[in-house]
Image (spheres, chains in turn orange, cyan):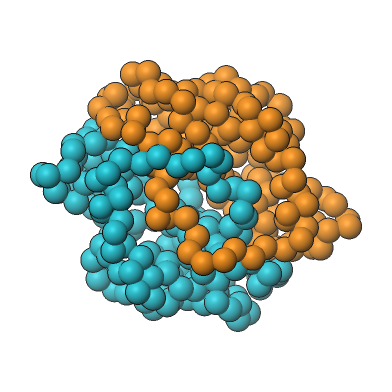
Length: 153
Length: 153
């Protein structure tokens, strides 16, 4: 067992739990009081961040440990919780990329972060090209369909 | 505070903490006993995984909360811990992509996972193209230099 202490929180952006249209959402990531602005030094040279956060609004009793239909769509296959990116997952961790618009002291202004107002952030990393997947990416048809409007603006 | 329970462990691959040449490293990710094979159902349709793990060998006393030179290279700028991907970071979380070679029951055979033998895994997600960074990626020169041999084979 490991303990996570939030290092920051998402402020602004969206408050509802709807699934799509995250592309134009702007929010700020505010560092927890114990971290100095220096912990972000140099980040302004990066266009994108990788953000690790907790789906804190997911009730632990609802966590799926086997398989389910993504978004409860019966027309999509029943796939394992680790073969989809749904929120109700063991450890309730989200990982995504967003654009970094501006660093303002201990606040990061970002665009396209798919996390709601109040979300606890447990890590921030610069996105580096070399950390992207190597080689051709293959993914199932249902996931391409699911993602169709995810980052619409 | 949130509690993380490992959902899997990395077996095989590398045992030393050296930084580079991860591209050809093959290892397996073995699910913890409480998760059925069904939790991986459908994952074989994905070419790449996103893996969240704990840098468990990092001594908590060594964690940096402000800034430091990446890899202690004095010729690179001193940057914030959240502006680099070094291991000695708050919450000690690693996030990376790897190729999925084969699913074998409750074991995943992977290539290019930059986590050593025994690493606790706290989440597994399918990599989906749409979750990559949107728009042009910009990153500092020191990071491009640092990554030059990271995924060499």
